[in-house]
Image (cartoon, rainbow, N blue to C red; front, side, top):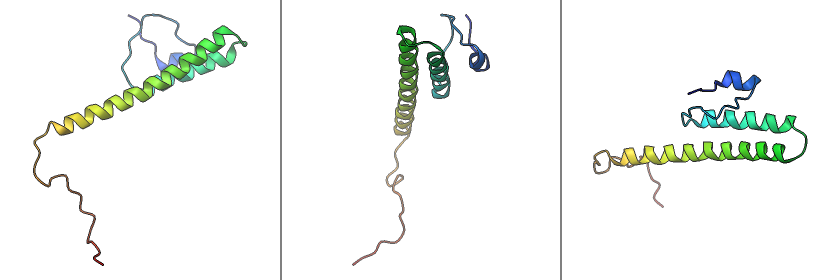
Length: 97
């Protein structure tokens, strides 16, 4: 299986259908940039639109991965034993008035 390196993609996009994805938002955004650059080099037409759509999809995937990671982090926090008042934030003295 071939894995595209980001250094390689910056110069020449990898057009292999076999590659691995780590699920990193940073990597998704790098792929989006490659697709955007490809779209910019193509004349107006279907191919340009397809690469622009791919760039948008990569950016959406990056956001989805970030949101999923945040949800997983929240769930892992909830799996810890809860101690009464352990999550109360002290905002300092209250004003009474």
